[in-house]
Image (tube, rainbow, N blue to C red; front, side):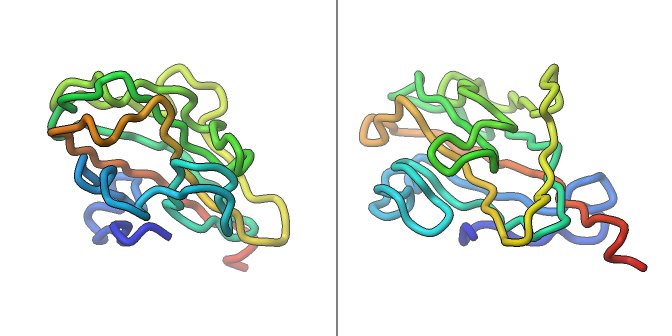
Length: 158
């Protein structure tokens, strides 16, 4: 799980979010922040594990907001999902992140019919984010926060 991920307070969770992750351009430039290849939940380079989705859990409502706009490389895109470790794009697919203005957000629920995914298996799966077309060394600014909801199947409550 990503080190910046944390549980929300009761008040924050009341707004439908259960976790968030904040990162900036310096994180993207830090060696080892993004994967260099297949390892654990990750199947490709430029990935990061955001959360671990246990059997019977469903993840939905991924929202990303640019706090500070990217400067330098503004063409990079982001995938978020659990579908496949080599291309985790079942929640967000090739969404432009680098070109977002400050305070601009986008969500997996905005016109995306596949806006939730359940872990129907019997092993943990990773919620991954993956960057494409990223030249991290060109970035001189940029800060983002991502929030999502994880729900547990009702059977776990009986």
